[in-house]
Image (tube, rainbow, N blue to C red; front, top):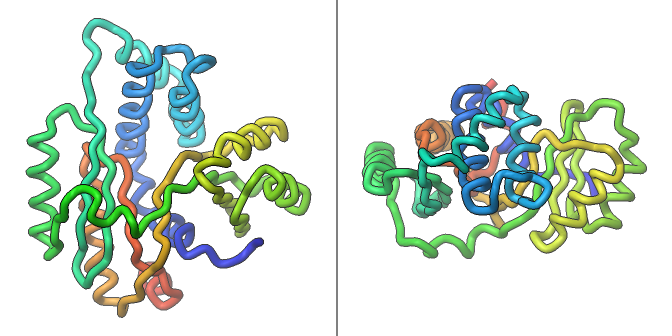
Length: 247
């Protein structure tokens, strides 16, 4: 079951971009706000909020920040965010899917359209590329003090489809329908993921030469730097040659 997972390799490599702590906190706070606004401020009865708080802790967000975000969501001055998605092609035919939380849809549309135009991409219509990505449950766990063999067996029993280990992290992927059972099993084993949630995993990846791939990654980084964008998914394959060129 362990093996080379192209998608998680891409996600790990882009960690250099995600290290911008302020950007990470902004995105997590938005998720906490919309979760609390939709389902209330009690994580015991709000699964989406519970997951958002877990991810906040995994990113080392201070407890005060988390509590302020929840109060902001349920208070009289709560900001209203809209969930929306954008799909299109980056240069060289790489599929891109962006998930957004925004309080101003016109601003977000203009910003994303500008990015696609600037980097030579083509913005498509909603649903036009969804067939290229599968919704999967993913869990990222720090590889410290774990019994890997036992954990892998337990995760397979819980429904994991892929179990990948490297020196720093364990990455678990499962069907969307098995997200709850895998999450429950991790909790039973007292293992708290650094990050977990439903992600869009490309069902096929595309190789590019290094220079073309770098151009695509600059575009993806520009999208990820937009505060209105929560997640960006793509089907660029992170080859060993490209990974070496980015180090």
